[in-house]
Image 1 (cartoon, rainbow, N blue to C red):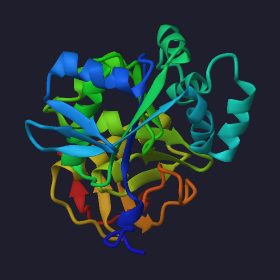
Image 2: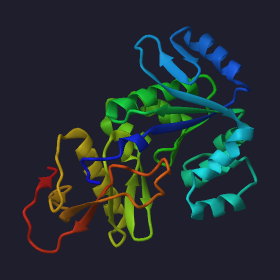
Image 3: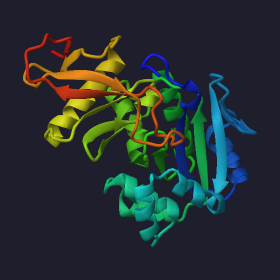
Image 4: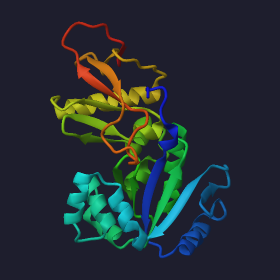
Length: 283
């Protein structure tokens, strides 16, 4: 597989919204009361009738959600998840993924959720992310508690999503669908597959603050500029930063059936120690 030939059949945007409504019927009624006939769902389709945009929708209750929660975790996190069971399975997952970014008040509300709404887009790219961001805020407006992007492994407070979902700032949208992870031997992004892009990694030996900056600038550059990347090219975030050389490889951070796995692969950035021409420099 190459960076230009991803397995698109395995690439989806998947968002999970715990909601404080007791049934599918209650969700439909709340949508009608809040938005009239602008949004409807029938069977497995959720549609904006004003634009004809749609996505797939699945709704499940607490009983069917527990194993689904466990299944999205890698083996190491499943062990931690099993130890941390004072509250609901989903609240434990939000706590684990949130890394103190989710308040105790929100976790208590998640502990009392009644239904989970899953929104799924079989199309990826910036426009598809905007569509799912808008649809997600619709459910937050009728009792949605918080948001988990399964295809990135990132969670958000309700207010964060509502503040960013319709922003014209690319970085605000990017931050909804991409997270940065500290791995065993590298820092890496997760979620660029939502934008139909490869993720990026950088050696763990880099200073963490610098690594975060380089990864974010590299990803932002690819979302805002029509660049074609090739093995061996170089990248410099700004004139004060080190120069990095790019090497593409397949995604190996997650199992192939994990929604976070990226069929577009990843670009690894290695710091250059000798003199090379700079392919991309952000001024």
